[in-house]
Length: 517
Image (cartoon, rainbow, N blue to C red; front, side):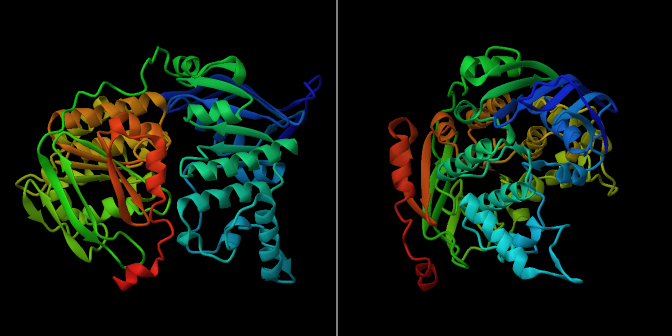
């Protein structure tokens, strides 16, 4: 790491990035971008997917080497050559896609690479006590000896934040930190952020949730197409102004006009039960042609388990599924796809993308049988045609269809995944948190795709933790509580309060009732 003393720096400034540029083959990711973070402040970094936010932070964190510009941290020009150097120097980053070792314990993940030693051996007792101390300080209720793989996503997120704090960081980058958190957990996170501010820590907060930005951030910097657009005090800018600066145009509505018209029943689910470990119990509902059905519920309500059971990704003990009055047995995802089902999973990185392969492979993998010719060779011409359709119809920002999908922003990865499933021409599209980590413009595009499917008399089921999204795009909302259906409401006639009340309906039902049934 190189470091140079800078004179005449604003004494309240903790970090300054000046005219940062970064170019990859075929694309200029950053073009003269600047960012200034003050001590004890939250600085929101906003922009559409592909605007360059993550690339800028990776240049700060030592993952990428910038081509031009200066990075000044605590009055010195720095150039971190690795993330370890950044961490050791007091700069931490909580990534949107969690990088954790699932098979090891919580405390092992927190102290990975810097285990406390007693002689030649790891001091397990000190590691445990140090972890407990951090958790107590942050009011986090997680067992340090629990395996990370057993934690829900929300608790894994809190563990990553605790890890960043454990480095005594002076700058903490939080990339979509609330994407997997409930409203209560978001409130808890904001308490942690305010406590860090009181200690003089600077927070760089990347989020697409406008309400959060107005609530927690002191300043906001907007990027578009790899360029700095504006920096404003949060109190001096409206959400509509932020959106206009992000997308370069007025976006007067968050949701497209609802042109889909629900018709006859297309899908019927009767008494679906999967009781191996606490899971769904006696779930029944119908879905109509052209309908968008939302699934609401708190963390642990088993929303994901429900749609994965329908898709054949989980074993079902009992129950029936009918598509167009025909009884089906989706005993695995392959059969489910053949039967006209498609599933966009919640965790892009873990279960959505093939990170080491290109956009073309990721676009066509769910529809591979279509591309096998009579001589058993793949139809490369058709593959390219369909990949180009995904890129064009989903507005994927990429230099080429041969680009590795892992090099795209999270939002562009999500667009490829949605396009992949649209290529299968499904009768039923299942979406699990489809707009998680997606910017406001891309959200609108995905909502429009859902409505377009409805106009073609297809059925759409969407799990979402964002109440405005459920109320803005769905026709009906199925509310899950502790693995059961707590109620099904018409979107136009319901309220947020009614949905939250239903979400808690079976919250205190003892889990061993599942085993008894």
